[in-house]
Image (cartoon, rainbow, N blue to C red; front, top):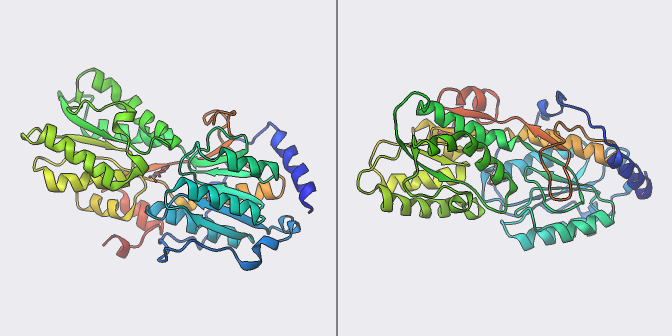
Amino acid sequence: MKRKLLATLLSVAMVATVFTGCGSKAADAPAEDTKTEAPAEDKAEAPAEDAAEAPADDAAAGGGLVGVAMPTKDLQRWNQDGTNMKDQLEAAGYQVDLQFASNDIATQVSQIENMINNGCQALVIASIDGDSLGTVLAQAKEKNIPVIAYDRLIMNSDAVSYYATFDNYLVGKTQGEYIVKALDLENAAGPFNMEIVTGDPGDNNVNFFYGGAMDVLRPYIDAGKLVVQSGQIEKDDVATANWATETAQARFENILSSYYADGTQLDVVLASNDSTALGVANALAANYTGKYPVLTGQDCDIASVKNIIDGKQSMSIFKDTRTLAAAVVDMVKAVMEGREAVVNDTETYDNGTGVIPSYLCEPVFADINNYKELLIDSGYYTEADLQ
Ligand code: BGC
């Protein structure tokens, strides 16, 4: 199929407004050989040498070059996402240019620019800062290269065709509900002391994680049943730049020494993900001797699952990255073949240029009672990974 024809088919597909509803099996069937280990090497993947010359005709035959831009190798989850995407796209017959950007926005922009110039026919991007890709993606749009936002919504760009993620609001809501249950907030007299840690302000997901949790917890704060001794409640006050463990740890050490050093009991910490929960756990280990608080997280990173087993973290949200990759591979196939992709949400994710048709995978929580079934029986980890 020639590029022009592909472009025409694509625009026809994009203009079509009817998207199929929920219930697709797309996300339920990850390719069998997906891996969860982080690649040992710290080197960004180079595309196959002749990748740039891949003829556009490949698209019709299920082939073609796909650029996959991931934010960083520093966090386990993006390594898994990158590996899953590469494995599954290659299994579907595509060539893959996979890049990690060390959480540096300029690096990610130039990686995407290279992908465009090297002839990538579709881009899958997990942005570092959702607001910083407008200019480079205008080039993609110019060349009719479809863009799929991966996990994090790309803001204020009309080049984004689709978005695939987990239900981010449900992630936050599930964390909030876990806390309500763990402290029996409905019945217990309290008050309970709580602190809050969320993620990077440039990550649109933070609005949903923080928002979903606070929709559940704020009524208890307003009623005085949950007390935030530090007074740091609003999103900007509890953000963690780059989701960095060290940054969360430093902030939490300050909180502990300023508000809990006198023996005040800390009952619960809402942490939006595992990298920040790890920072909290490190700070607690060195600076806190009271009864260990309820501590939430997200991603089921190995370090956090180990902490769950050791009683140092209460729960984590399990987002099976194999499932997300499978859904995105289906989207890639659709856009490469000029078809509409399957989506199940056409209301929630407005990126400033309009609502982006989205496929939301379902997150669930893992804790000491169900982690074996969710994580080991499903083949996500082996017993040995968690020792
Ligand atoms: C992802 C989380 C992850 C966080 C930090 C978010 O956008 O949805 O799964 O923990 O980024 O990398």
